[in-house]
Image (cartoon, rainbow, N blue to C red; front, side, top):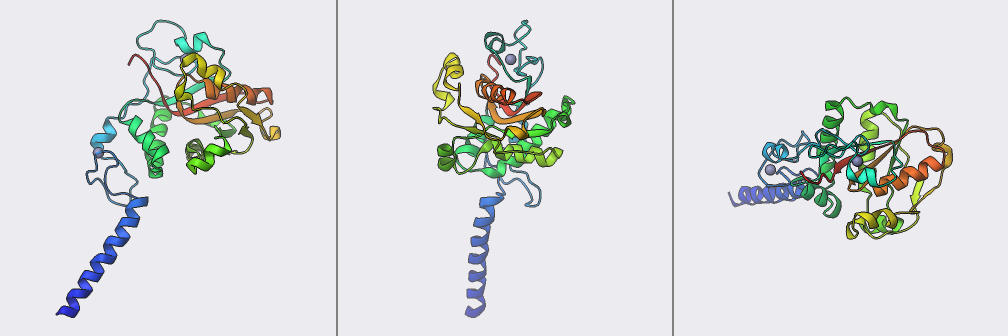
Length: 256
Ligand SMILES: [Zn+2]
Ligand SMILES: [Zn+2]
């Protein structure tokens, strides 16, 4: 009897041990509200309630950066009207507000990389809803991190998003064509105007042969003013890129 009991305890300890490691990679609870949510085989990391609170970016869009302009009658959003924008157009899938802010923060700073599956699903929904022709692009280029930041974080969130989009739509990806030469202070510390000067000259082309005459899709996690992606687009165009589009997970929609 004692013999069988100790086996049962041992089995339960081993089971808990494995469950702990599996939960690190494939958590079974909603990553926001922590309620039990799903079977392990599906890649659901949010419960339906939390998922329903994430807001897709909706029209009326700024034709340049796709910022929501429902409270404005101007042709372009204030940001695109006041600055020289070097990308041809940007598609930003989600509105950067809660609960997405928390999710993106957890993805970037708490290593919750499993959230990439949720992000891909949401980005795909946005692209399909608006019939956006992503196949026009011949090459995906994620916004690079400076090597020092890459070492600190251990991964580049834009590369992770870019890799999934590349696989989903069968578009080649290149992570080495453009590099970040200045470890700029994070753009969050600057006001709108300073963001445009802080980023100038931050990128350099390493392999112009893969860029020349290509229709390129830049991928980033978040568009705030668009200064970072515009500077990258400027650098790519100087190296001979044809069209430069931008795809981001989210955009800061003010006045919403
Ligand atoms: Zn939840
Ligand atoms: Zn705009």
